[in-house]
Length: 313
Image (cartoon, rainbow, N blue to C red; front, side, top):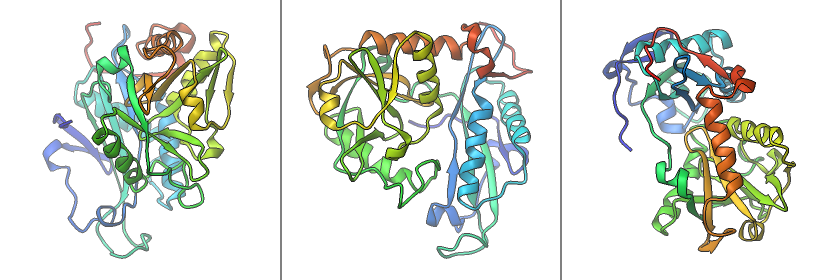
């Protein structure tokens, strides 16, 4: 989708006009993928705009930067405030939020350490990643011929720009084959995740998701869904899965900040369960949306409210 422009982007410590947030064509990250990012969402609530799990996302952002040997001059608190300030400056009640840290212009070659570290925070209006119909009706997925990047080739807990080329190849292949999304397997044949989402199945009434040790991202939406499922009394397990378990699952769904909570109705053309969005997936989706919109008093601590933006909800 085309990114709609807004007024400001936070760049290296200050707000600049959207069209002035630029980098040099010899920026190191443009050539070698030396960057890391986060994805957050701000939602409208009765109390005003609120960013979902802001500190958790920005701590993961700092962790990614650290694992890529990029030291940021801003603290966790300062980065959280920068996110709030960027949303407020653009007067957005709801938006997607993209922090990015990267190696800038100054040196060339695979050694990134001489290139300067730069940081931006951008926000823009963005509907659900896979579309509103996907939220209600579910999506069709296919097992990709591309394998998940190996944990010993690239740290899976880093949301690195370079590693998402792997995701892009898998997603394009899936779309060309008529699916909405791809599912990647590890080199050992274990189910990992979608190109931009974590994966869950329902089996014998239990909620199962692949463990972090299989090379999946420790998703913050994933963690939220697991807690909401436990709140409802469901058994939640982290276990390795193989592709046949997707075909035989009672239900399947994916989770992620951009995608939110999306049911999966088929895999490789095989119906999952009834071939429709399942009741557990839709129930957890409803619980998740209640949280992000400030309607769940038990999880209000997951919300970071933004001051200075008028709201009409």
